[in-house]
Image (tube, rainbow, N blue to C red; front, side):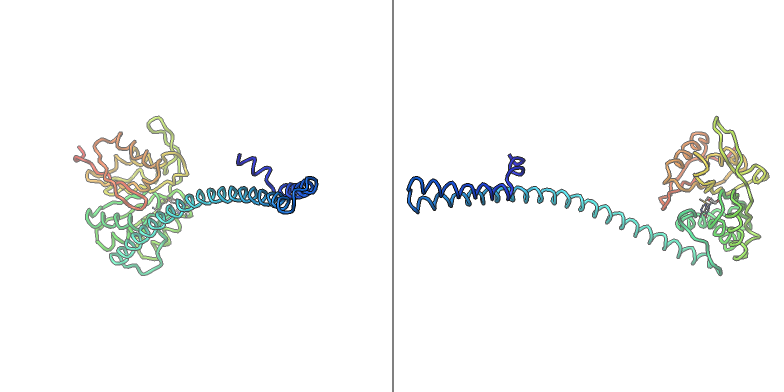
Amino acid sequence: MRRLIRQFVRIETVAVLVTAWLGGALGLGLATGAGAVATVTLMALGPLLGGLLLLIRHSLELASRIGNLAGESVRTLGTVRRVGADTEKQIKQTFRQLEALQNLSAMLPASGVLPATRGWAASPDLLVALVDLVDTERPSLVVECGSGASTLWLALAMRRFETGGRVIALEHDPFFGGKTRDFLARHDVRDLAEVRDAPLESFSLGGGTYSWYARRAWEDLTGIDLLFVDGPPTTTGDQARYPAMPLLSGSLSPVATVVLDDLVVPDMQKVLRLWLDAYPDFGAEMLPLEKQAAVLRRSWPAG
Ligand SMILES: C[S@@+](CC[C@H](N)C(=O)[O-])C[C@H]1O[C@@H](n2cnc3c(N)ncnc32)[C@H](O)[C@@H]1O
């Protein structure tokens, strides 16, 4: 019915019908000698009916537009709520990271320009966790997979807490390795941290093939107290960071701590599951940080 009304009740059609009605009523009145009142009444019925039809059509159109508007309002409200929740989350996260940065600068005052954090680099909340590990565990040897901001902050922590230890960062990309070395030089901590150029090479491990840091860059390492796994980038292959444990677990000290970053990435969660399956003597503690991290330690001392 609605469709019929919309299809046939148009202003032009109604105008033609009303004009025809007026002509017909006038003709009928004259032909039958019905008198002026009856003829005019009959003629008036035409415009009235026409107006009523147009009113019904416009009411239907209005109702349909109101219906569409209500649907759009519900969708817009949903979007506004989502954006609002997301913005609130971002603001809270940004505040946490600023708080962490302030924490870092208070603990480890730096005299030069600092590398950017977040994104490709470790987030300030993780850097605070790493610095805290240096403070509480006093590692003699820190090995880092993937150099950058973290290398500098770890070296600054080694200097501040006078651990007598050093940091060795494995870096597959000479460009980023050079940048990290520049930062270490500017902050005068090149004696505490070394960036080793380690182009990726192929390793066959547990039935899979992985690209990982060249053996010559890490095969001499022993007694690693803190292993921070933040490379190679996930773009270099599936479970790109998995080899860290198979290849370096034999070089860990009995009380070693292993930190795995980026657990917001599902691929990294898989790496953690593979490690925990393959190394049942290690347990993991999850750190609820911006990018989520796991801290692994032996549940019982290594034999
Ligand atoms: C997750 S990043 C390592 C970050 C490092 N641990 C830090 O806190 O800055 C892993 C690798 O990504 C590469 N990388 C660093 N910054 C990058 C950038 N802006 N774009 C592309 N690759 C980058 C480097 O080769 C680095 O070893």
